[in-house]
Amino acid sequence: MNAPESTLPRERQHIILERLRREGKVVAADLAQEFRVSEDSIRRDLRDLASQGLCRRVYGGALLAPHVAPLGERHNERAELKRNLGRVAASLVGEGQILFIDAGSTNTALAKALPDHRGLTVVTNAPDVAVAVLGRPGFDVVLLGGKLDPRIGGAIGSRTLRQAQDIRADFCFPGVCAIDPRTGLWTIDEEETMFKQAIIEASGETVAIATPDKLRASATHHTAPISAVTHLVVAADTEWELTDAYRAAGVAVHL
Amino acid sequence: MNAPESTLPRERQHIILERLRREGKVVAADLAQEFRVSEDSIRRDLRDLASQGLCRRVYGGALLAPHVAPLGERHNERAELKRNLGRVAASLVGEGQILFIDAGSTNTALAKALPDHRGLTVVTNAPDVAVAVLGRPGFDVVLLGGKLDPRIGGAIGSRTLRQAQDIRADFCFPGVCAIDPRTGLWTIDEEETMFKQAIIEASGETVAIATPDKLRASATHHTAPISAVTHLVVAADTEWELTDAYRAAGVAVHL
DNA sequence: GTGGAGGTTGCACGTTTGTGCACGTTTACG
DNA sequence: CGTAAACGTGCACAAACGTGCAACCTCCAC
Image 1 (cartoon, rainbow over the protein chains, first blue to last red):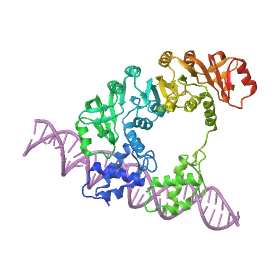
Image 2 (cartoon, each protein chain N blue to C red; image 1 turned 90 degrees about the horizontal axis):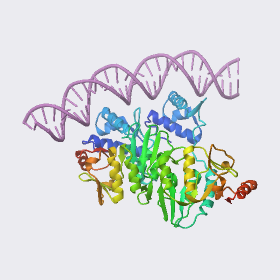
Image 3 (tube, protein in one colour; image 1 turned 45 degrees about the vertical axis):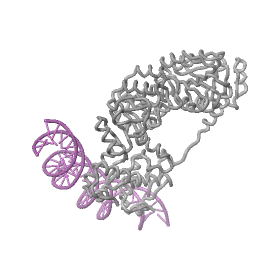
Image 4 (tube, rainbow over the protein chains, first blue to last red; image 1 turned 120 degrees about the horizontal axis):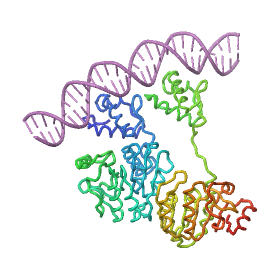
């Protein structure tokens, strides 16, 4: 079915994941024959995918991870995408760390994907992010107060800013309005910009989660240079040229 | 029915469990024929599932374990009651007023029941209350920050207290742990008590919404005398003696 | 061009896991 | 009480697995 001509390892993993989504399972031996590579390589691919939480490794092949939906059946594909991005981003954080999580639907998906029992502390200006982790085992939640902006879904005024400046975090997940491999992060609103700058400043590493539209979008206020971004999480079908451009800029790209 | 072509061992167990969920029982011989494997393998699968507590092993096959949900949902009539109480309480507020809304599931129901297009300002320490009104037309929302207490579902520390003291409101809806016609409001936690006292102090009128269990409950910390409570919202089937006692204490009772 | 770093691949090795069969034991039922 | 089906256990075998290693590729600095 597929062109076994010459498949790049990256591309191969992508195709495997796609088939996994479609059929729910894959058999290592079949894939090896199809791609004309040894089963060893397939096993390595499967191991990689499993380590990213995208599939569950089993004897003889792999099954789709229970949390990864089998390719948008009735749910919004957009929500599906964000869930996946959230899962990938969540895999970056380690035991006992402190996370700044900005407002935004993608970041809410991230919050839902964060693992329990890791002693994580979530600091957020968005009530729905707080709701997503509140009450789950192994989470501390700190809410940043202030007047909520209904367009953003979070607090951003000067009062919020002051509270944020009293905190230091390991990771920071700013909402992304637009991102560019040369210029960095962009935002629409000025107060929002100041808030994002503050939390980026106060954090060790910055993770930008960008849905495909954000990679092509533009916005009015420059928020941070690309050098301030340590990790970038994008969809798996993003063009190689683009991801390579980010990698060249020193950003660790995850998909 | 199923493709007996090639089924991975783990996948097979998964399918068995699924069928178990749907039909409540499975027969080993049938499964063996269906998956084209020996009954020995099926028995091993069943034994594995049983050792994980997912099914109960019986002679000839297996039954669904009592703990495992057999597919389906349960409805909560408590939610229905709280919705009704919330509707009644919501009818008390007028145009353009400022409301302090404490954390708690009953108050979340109230927030959902608040009418749109009234120019209301909601001040809350609970993220789920904020989510309930955020983005709806005619609402301003102010979030009180601080460390969230997972048992309460809201922020209560000293930082939250300070923010609350900077605000004056028309109405205040403290979460009710216990209430008594003679002694007033009671709470379980000390910090929680201080927060409720602060918002009651800062508000013109205080509305207590009490589910039936709260009318009979007791708690450790005295929060406010009954004279501080202006309105009480209770279920329609509350005893007359009790509602009369509250009315005698100067409380407007609504049901 | 040259060489080294980093990544990918296939192979060999020993190990783990799943399978079916044989055997003796337990269970259900007439 | 007797029989047949279902069961558990031990065993042999094959398939799948992880790991270490050497070969190979590409990219980039020198």
